[in-house]
Length: 534
Image 1: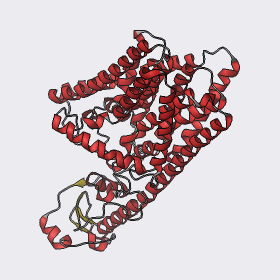
Image 2: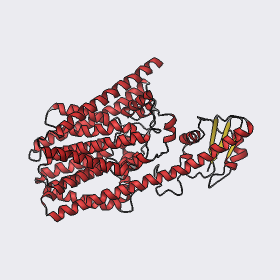
Image 3: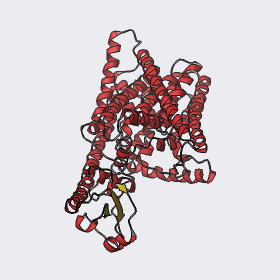
Image 4: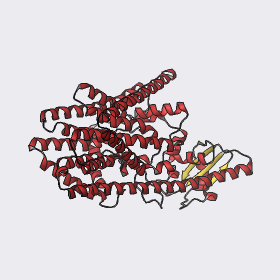
């Protein structure tokens, strides 16, 4: 079986290499297509536009390049990147990317700043490709209309939900292929009408969903919006193309689920406990959870934005919806828009619908901003484009204000996380120093660590401004990462071992600390360090 698994690993790496080649080839095709405009000035404007998207991405996420950040997973990933854990979750693109990183001697966490910089460049490219995929279908547009549309596309990727995802800095490396493939899948789907475009779109989408399944919502939102713009005067064609778009998205999603089931059955991967389930009881339960979750989402963005922050954005989006439906031609056009937007919104949460153990967090909403952006884009194309200059001007002020609030909040989230990291690292340093002191005094070498907790362990850092999901959670209370953090600060790989009951009873039983006291919470004997975390 060892030889079979080795062959399987090599197959995954070869397929991932093919994915990378496909993305480069498709990107070259897309760039040539975008620049095929004959006028030199227009080509320059399109290049300048890319610079604008790049600047917005750096403004939002550049703080992750200047300094390192760590999630509750980071120190575990530093020692064990676990490629096949990603495969267990249906993220086969990530699995192959990590296998190549291991082959090349790269680490997701140690080299996070390099990968974050590359991801920002890829993100800007994705926004640029999607923007021109929409713009090339929208017809003549004023400068204010173009700026509004560009701002809406930026908000699809520059928002607090995506930042919450990127505060797991180890994700930057594995998202490179997926983010790029996402933009290319949208571009392919909106090219000239023939069956080859759907094949190309499906291939790119399979790469994107093998990276992060929630991207299905972003794909369907922009593709369905593009189809609406492309076939505004051809209802039959519009429905036909939309059905195909939904079938492509559904087919690729089904492939993702089936692949995991097959590999699990064949024994190539283990059960993650978080895989897909088609049990009706599970789906019913998840539907209830998702409906209840909407209240949290539309009040304060699941604990991230100020109270009523998302509610105000929701009101603006609702106004956009009213405008679109009023301007839509006849009942058929309104029905199409209703189905399109409902499908895109629902698909944004589709991966959670079939989760065997649903886990909703701010990053669960990464696709929803694309739906909001599509509403705003359609509103500006069908109404604001021909409105008075003052209306167009204030529409752009609105978008710019929302982007600025998002970016400022994102910077605060990153700064907060870095400050909380510093507290965890300081405590790990104190424990590492205590171990070194013991070694100097006794001549013993500590190679193992046993960790327990006091009666009421502190889950969230008290100083944290964000205390929800994994934002603000102490690394020191995370079972699979705390011993790795201590290992990294002690410059060794400590082996985790169980806490003996006699040691626990003698030193840590019925204790409840509010801060680290190494004299009381760290005890060394022979080659083992015993630690109690408050």
